Length: 439
Image (tube, rainbow, N blue to C red; front, side, top):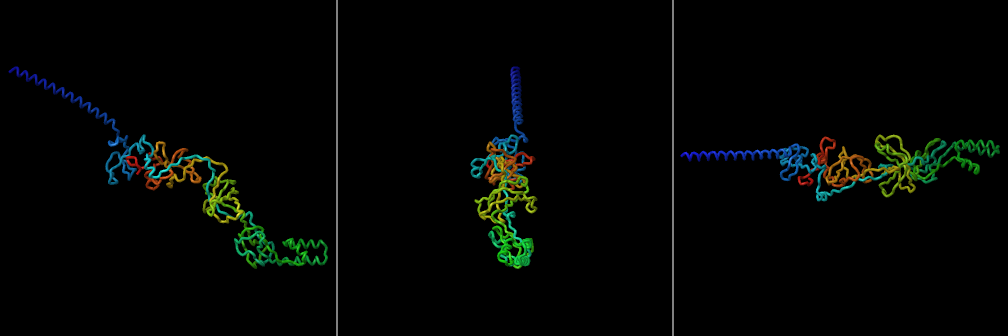
């Protein structure tokens, strides 16, 4: 009996010791497990630092509704705007987080399908100039004014209407001058009476004072008959830009009967925008063409800058002479003129088609060295043919998208896709699918 009690007591002590050991081992293992879990939790990125997508293992910056890209969410779920799940924006897609690349990566196959073409920003010496519109006008410096020097009447008008073409030496009008009759008869009477040379010279001087031409006086000596009609002729070939009289009209001394404007040389009046007024100088070369024959060029140098700005068009006018010996031009024609300076200027140029103008700013899509695309705001200068000068925002050798900007040319895209370039937000990216394809 005593032996059985001793055996039971020893068994109880052994069981108790075994249980105590098991409890110690379990406690140590649990403590190690808790420590490992705490360490793992501590190593997991917080919401502020981003999250890891369990499917791809990529870092998630935030979730958003692609239809409302400006609204960001810290965790996945259903969109409050649309009946769809929120989409993750990954750090390696250029979404704007710390260490994220700028812009987006567009698959080469997609680029080919979209017809995206690139151009290189180049620096080139170009003539310092600009394009303008010019209008041809009569050269007033070679105009011939037909005037009457006496009081008389239009006996016959050879010219019939303004803008009529006339040849050099062509008659314009015939005048009847009754005041010429008396001094001529007086001169003939003195000559017949054998008066001395002094009286004849005085009578001749009186006729000259009355504007009787020397040819008339010479014929008077030869024929002995007084003449009362005089014909006025054009001194050059051109057109009648003015015709101020009609048959039978009375004219007075100094009255302009007609004005003949030549066509062998014309003025080109170039309209220069007010913003370019400080760039234009006398002597600058002008090359002009007109729509009737674009292969025909008319060149010259700016003769003078006309003072004042036209209030209706806010333009400054520059005048130059152009040769029109072949009479291909007529006054009133519009010509496209390129005004260029004497010295070339080094300029940074991009194709004009690469520039997206939103109304408030000008933007180009730049291709980074890693192949990503990002929008960049630029400041544009003057046009140079098919290229445009860039004064700020780009450097030589960069590549810009020259075609395919329809991806971002709508107003909605420009509002939600392009970056907030005023510094109130981080860089934005073009919308992309999670697998990198452009939407």
